[in-house]
Length: 286
Image 1 (cartoon, one colour):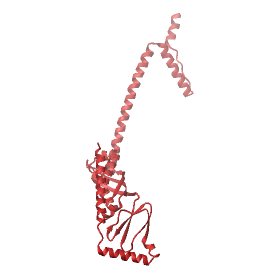
Image 2 (image 1 turned 90 degrees about the vertical axis):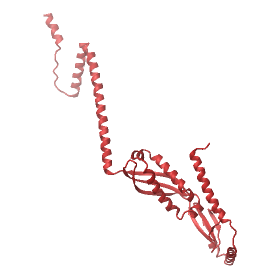
Image 3 (image 1 turned 120 degrees about the horizontal axis):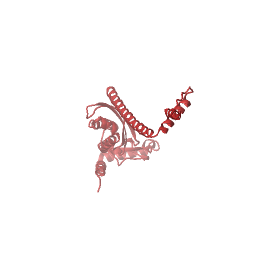
Image 4 (image 1 turned 30 degrees about the vertical axis):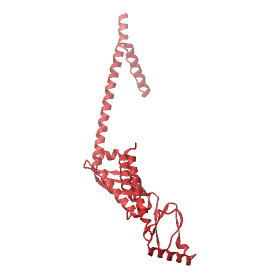
């Protein structure tokens, strides 16, 4: 069984192939008498002007280009290239198509989100011509049509999202935009390879409000952490006091340790009091 995404891809490929087959079928119509006469005349002129006619008849297409040939207004076969091929003057019209990936920087779009927040979003779109014949015969200007469609699709998709979704679900939004654009431009012979959201700019008032909210949240967390620390410290002091209260020697040792720490930190005169227990012992001996 195939998934819904695979089935949609199969449908798009079948649609593209069907449109391409229709264009090929139009080309296979028999030539009329006038066209045959023009063909004979063109061949005669080429033969008579050899080798000068070779400069006009021989065309070269680079590796990243394809040539669509129109012979008397009809598409002659599929796209030609890369390499060298022969054309007839006065009969063939050549249109070269660049197959390299084109980067389109979508200008910032002012969008009203689902939760009534105005944001400015700009994106970048990568696409290329995958079927030169369709890109010439199906749409007047494939590049400009793809540019305008990318702008409108971006506005339509983000208008159905809340601000938090736009900020946190960029990858999912970009994937949905790519699928929508690819499906819409497939009949034009255009393949949308990637769509990415570059930046989401918020109004200054909203930025200040969000910053104040985040600061208040951090202060509240800091106070809670400080209170928990004080609570744990008080419990530890109470447990230490309970242990020291059971032994007077422990209290004296702690007192001596405190005096040692004070003497190490600051050089000052320390008054060492005599414990009351010691004085009571001498009083009993007298």
